[in-house]
Each structure stands twice: as structure tokens, then as C-alpha cells.
Image (cartoon, rainbow, N blue to C red):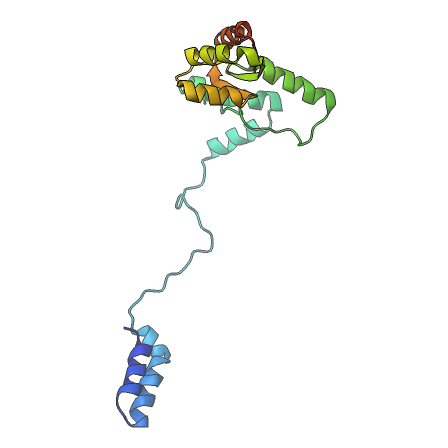
Length: 193
């Protein structure tokens, strides 16, 4: 319970002399009350060093640093791999930049088209989409869809009636081409996405 709460309760609970109440308020707002808590005051250092006090580098280390700083940039790049080899340390693993784009947004013409073609060429997972079908071949297409999906008759019929619709996802190129060929024989038009 804080001192201010105690003072309020004393003030409201019973009639007391003003002198006693003023003594409580004086103690509450005095600087001596803060000194009575016994809390130690922390002195912040002028400069924070997370590694603690360190001795200054030896003259040998200073000379080595001067010699490294005097090297041309090509030789400075060779220092880290040479030290890793000498100390039998494994080389650091490269961090993948996949999924990050460091190019400006919006991009332009030929460079953007070339990147889009590269992404299409690298694609390994495909979806099969039913574009359209002949009304007379609807039953054949429903039967064919049931062969490569786990759908019942009602679900396969509803799926075909929603065309254009994705029939199956995450297929290899060979699997997708086989399904497209089966749908084509049955009388439908399917594409790979």
C-alpha cells in the first residue's frame, strides 16, 4: 500500500487534528522519505563497452593492422579465405537470396520479359485447368476426371460444370501432360498452368 493511499484513508476515515494530517502529508512529499527506501543509486558509465574492459592491442597487432590497411583491395579480399584455410575453419555458408527482389519496382520492357521467360522455363510444378468441353462429351469428361481425382460422381459433375476450373494442382510436367491428353481424347480442352 502506498503512502498516498494511507494518507487518504486517514483523512477520510476519522476526524483528526490538522497538525497530525499535515505531518503525514509533509512526510509523503519530503525528500527524506525517498532516502529511507534503501535503494542504491546506479551510476552510468560515460562509455558503454559490452565486452568489458580490454587491454590495448600489442605493438605486433598494431603493426599487422597497419600492414593490412596498406594492401591493395584485391589482396584484402584474399585475407579471409586464407585465414579460414590456415585455421582449419569451414567456409561460411552462402545465404540464399531466393524470394527477394533487389531490382526497382515497375521495371521495364525487355529485362522484365526475359525474367518472366526464365521463371516460366524454371517451373517444375504445374496445375491442370479445364477450359471448355463439348456438351455431348460431358459424361465422358466426368468419368475421366474421376479416374485421376478422388471425387465422387456429384463432386466431379459440379467441378466440370464450373469450367473453366483447375482440376488438379502440384503435378509434374509428365503427369500434367498425361491428364491433358486424356481430357482431349474425352472431348474437352485442358491447359497446363
